[in-house]
Structures are given as structure tokens and as C-alpha cells.
Length: 345
Image (cartoon, rainbow, N blue to C red; front, side, top):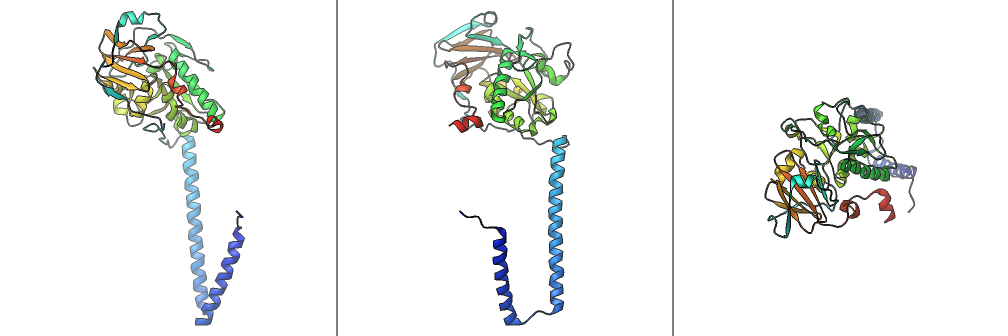
């Protein structure tokens, strides 16, 4: 299709305009000079008003861009629900209907060396209302690509997220802080409690202040896809009355999959998750069976390929039985699709 230049349209408009003027002149005669002067003044006034409006719009746009870049204005780009087309809600069913189920004592589970049984505190909640810290010292490993420490699950989650961001944007994300030890700065700050457990990641997009993480494209990608790697936004917007802290866009907490997907899709703060699950209920979600039990005797399906147990610091134990053979179902089931993958399809 041939694209017409704007000059072609101007020429046509002038021709049509001239014909209209000739017809009007023949019918009414030529306008008086005073009329011409009045029309000219109106045209000049309209032009001036139009130019002023354009200048005002450009000025306001530039001002808003400057304010966002400098952190004067923060745009809340945190999605309230997942944009993943494969997202589903956890399906509640009557407890332990499928059987047969095995039973294990929590203390024995904590000391077990079985590779299929994992006990940690990834769903542990600590805030101004639940101050009891876990007696177990966090088992830390090196975070891939970084000179930081975190629990194994948190470090693995960061690795997956960083690789996905690098594939999407061709450059990685910055990790400002992970585990914060007793001798480190900020150890006693309330917002860093999860960092002292080795379960939090403070993320930053290059070129942006850390507090403006949500304004960056990498921050927006993280807000949508962190759930796919077992991470949640620890202090979401509009949850201040529940978490006790204001919205913090850069602090992500490891809870493990599928809990991260459920918490994100149900728009929950971490503090709300145990009550959401309740006691004496069971949920099926993307190949997992989840239940919150009072213990210390805990049940899980015998045919589970792996079992994960975590205290919640609110009087319960959350038992997660994986019923699939693959270690990371969210990675193999296409929950995350990058631009590079789209181009290859």
C-alpha cells in the first residue's frame, strides 16, 4: 500500500477550499475588509490557544516523568492478580479422602535425612504480633551470581528469577541484600526480619533507586512472575494494617511454590495465608496437595513424590505433598514465557 504524504492532502484541501470560496463568492459576493480582519483575529486567537495547550501538555508530561524518575512520585504498578493465563484457584476438598495416608512425627521429620522429605521455616511468619523466631539457625548457601547468602530454597528462587529476567531483558537484576546477620547493618530493622531468616531478597533494577523498583520494567516483570519461582511481595500495597509496615516494592520473600502462586493470585499478605488455609481442610493446586495441621503427628499422601513441612508460627504446620515427578513443575509446565521463547515458537 502506498503511503500518501501530508503535502498531498494539503494540496487537495487547498483545491477544495478554493472551489468552495469561488462558489461562495459567486453566491454572496466578496467579504468586506472588516470581515476579513475579524476572521483573521479569530484564527490567530484559536492558533494561540492550541499552541498553549500543546505546551502545557508537554510540560506536564515532562514533569511527571522527572518526578517518577527521582522518586517524588511512586507509581503503584504491583498487579493485584496474576496475568498468567494458566492460573487456577486452589480447589478445596474433604480432608484425606483419597488415601492411603502416611503419618510422621514433626520432630522425627525435622531430623530426617530423606531427600523426599524437607522440613524448613519457609512459611514462618514473624511480625509485631508474632515475635517468636525459629529456634533453628538458618542453613545458608551462596546465592548464585552474587556475594550473598540465603537459604537453599531462596537462593534457588533468585537464580530462576534472575535467569528469566536476563532472558527477557538481556541484562540481570541487582540483589542489594539477602541474609542479614547479627553483625550486619539493619539487622534490627522491622522490615528486615525475613532477611535475618535467610528468606528475603531486596531487589533493584539498574538505573533506578531501590525504592522505585516498581517503576522499572524489571520490577513489573518481577511483580508478575516472582510467584512462579516461589517468591511473593512481602509488604504489598493496601495491606499495611495486616503486615504492620508500609508498601515496600523491592522486598520479596521466599515461601516456595505453590504457596507463592496461591498467595499472589488470592491477593493475600503472608500473614493471611494460614487463616486462608484453615485447619482440617485440604487443597489441590497444580499437582500439589496442601493441608494445614496442628501436629505434632502430621499426615501426607503415601504416593507423594516429595513432602515439604513448615511451621507457620501461628500454631500450625503446613504440609505440602508434591504429586508430580518433576522437581519444578512451574518451570516445565510453561508458567514463564520470555520474549526469546516466544520468538522460537
